Length: 540
Image 1 (cartoon, rainbow, N blue to C red):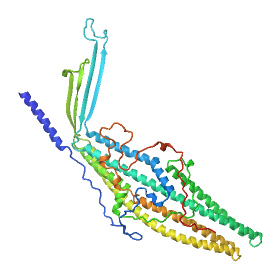
Image 2 (image 1 turned 90 degrees about the horizontal axis):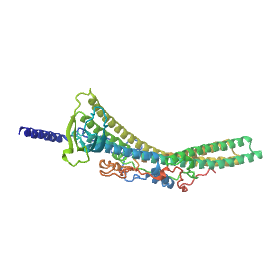
Image 3 (image 1 turned 60 degrees about the vertical axis):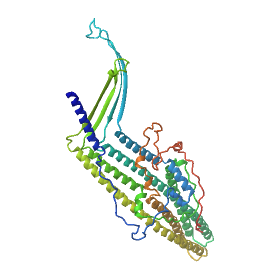
Image 4 (image 1 turned 135 degrees about the vertical axis):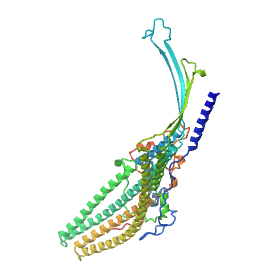
């Protein structure tokens, strides 16, 4: 009776201990997390060119580059998104972060192991210490199979906080992917528009060279007729060859720009070519891009979303560091059958053991306190980084608004300068032909006209490139809702064992690959002719 009573008391004590520990399960030691709230103006109502914002419902969404209405640019952007190696590598980084989160979460479940084995053994009849009349067996067989289970109930949410931390970091990785995609889209658009600007400069030089060749003929005819000196011919030839040299420099710049675009679209530069345009004025209108409210910027910028998700992850790291001050409790159970033959059906051949273990470091020389303090410091560091990212985003938008408006004014003013310079060039050439002025005045007018025309092309180029930067600063139509939810971070189902070479989709991250990715031969995208929307000014 006494033995039975002790056993019942022991079982009751164990049950009470398990119940007490179970009540601690779900104890979250991480601080309550809330994204920082900043005080900022209600609209873009600063000084100078800034005006109050309005809801940006018409901000380009998704394929924002289509606002330029250029089929060539559209084709390049699609090819870049489908095969750019840097973007695909970033997608795989996101997949790896999802798997790390799943590995961490797996520690919450009981870990089950099974084992089985058999052996057949024989000893020597003449082994040492075996007597001549010994009748002990010389052969023995052993067969066993067993299972083991261990489980850490995570009473102090160490594993749960580590899992949440890794899932937050996976969300940050998805935001990094979106940020890189936006950067590549904007870089490709800016490079392409810059290339078209070089095409326009080349066309201007081409037109001017034809004009200067005519001028050289005129000066030579006047010299032959003893109407003009050889100095006029030299000046005309100098102007012609200097312009041809500048055109060669533009051709080299275009080739380098074309090579950069080729690499972005997964193509070897030597087999990639974009047909040049012959228009002297870029066929792009001035875009009016509404900026919206500052509060909306926090939802549109993927780099801000990444910084905020890293901040959330670091808040969970504090909970993990705090849990290190409490004991780690593990339950274990082992059982199976073993026999010296092949008959395991008898319960007498069974074996089992179970136990519970609690480990509590008593003295670590400040190790855990240092880890906790470091976790708090990392959290504050990420909060400072988040604030810095927000400020940089505001700066990008302010710069974009200022530049697009100022460059639009510059473009209009420069076109007026071109008209004046071309009038001066025509009048001085007419005066020189009539013998009413010297050729030095003609050269000065020609140089002024050429510089004005090149400056006009450059002004238009930087204006459209500034529009690209402003769209990028506003997030390119991206929205925080595109981030994968925490519940979607798991890369595969609970009972999924096939199709593991690719994760299931999450958010807007594209992890697909295709055989075409290995094709670097670069079938050039279509080269539709650029429509000349503006009459190109003539040098003659």
